[in-house]
Image (tube, rainbow, N blue to C red):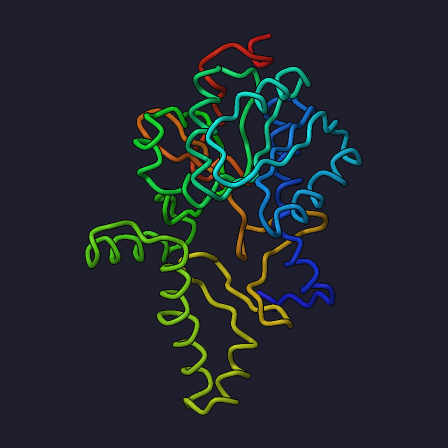
Length: 284
């Protein structure tokens, strides 16, 4: 496969999270027909910029942003937020939350049986297997940005090998940080040294710049010209499964994480998007 040559790859990767969020919402609309979005954003550095990158383009794609609000880290009571979102007529809640506030957020959503679907960035805590128990299973139907290796999805031929090796050595499922460093040592750096035929620094750097190798997290791991990991975007916000890919998983029955975005990966996994068990716009 040819090395990507995109002059704006630095800007592209910097905005990839927002691009992927917008594209994921377009995919969700294909599943549901829903286009009224509420954005609930934790007030932490970086999230306001990411939220703006989601909110601003949505109307261009036929979405209506009916609610936007921030909340302070450490929030444990979301009653007023949920009441306002329900009154707004939102069909989709797209949260951006990174702190333990995600636990009460998810629990209250379930307890209220709010009439919208939850689909967004709820991490990294929502990705771990223990999230099911820590929310008493109330995370069922919630969709979140996740990692194939944590969910046990075989994105590449290396993903499950790495997962099983880590489980055997440490007795737990690796998180994204562990997998990233493993891939660097096991695949990326090893490949560069082999191709450079030396450990001399400049030669290895040159080899790294032309890296194109399968890892635990990408079918083709490639560096951008700014030395970031390349997130494939075929046009505006369409991630390619060949490179680093933004995935969404949905908690479904029996504490399973099912890939629901990109649609290609959901199809490969034989997955299906599921609605909450209570009544909502999906009942009509």
